[in-house]
Amino acid sequence: MQFAPSHNLCEFIKHYLIFDIPSNGRKRYRHFSNGYNGLVFTLKKKEFLSLNSKAALPETFIFGQISENQDFSIKGTTSIVIVLFQPFGLYGLTGISATNYFNDFEDSYLIFGKEILELKNRLELSSNPSEVINYLNFYFTKKLKLSDYTLNPILINTIQIVHKKRGNISVNELCKEAGINERKVQRMFFNQIGINPKKFISNIKLHYFLSLLRNQSGFSSLTNLSLQAGYYDQAHLIKEFKKTVGLVPSKYLNTPRLAVNLIEI
Image (tube, rainbow, N blue to C red; front, top):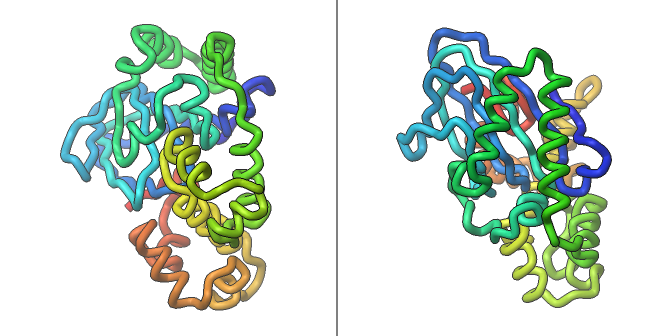
């Protein structure tokens, strides 16, 4: 289930996600790029493995921007809590360059210290989602008060333009509309978001297509949806879709999902 953070955190945290996976067997999942960084807590976990690196994942970890997709497996009954940050939110709360986490995971303890383990214990003992959300809001409100990060109006504006255009804009056009040179945009995106603006734009465009695909009413051809989302044609869409998701759109649509970009495979 998806939950909004408290109002004071909305500029840094997009939303919280809480999942229960009641299975004693092994399940495989795929996470693909959407332009956001996140913090994961795995509660009551049995076994949580990254299939890309063949490594066990920490009980709480940061995930950075990814170039394509990552697969992992979970064995046993598990509860997962995800804090999905705004594109620059993790940088704003930690001051650490987002490029450090590109295509990688980082043990949250190495970033936040023992307080993150204390938070995990509280979440694990919580009796309902409301209690989980309250603990998360309290923790990140405290982190925000300690942060000296000032929201960059230029970065905010460029992100808003990309969303307004639904990803149907080039980097050159974005720079002209925002009134900023490309070198500065590249530097801001790499440092605070973790990817270049071209990849960020591509993510927003693909996820706009996904919203059209999920919400289509009646019959709508893939060609029409791809054109509506700003792709040249259906072939262009499928090429970009398979590169990011690893599946064709019809397969994705019929795949169980925990979230838009978190699917069972």
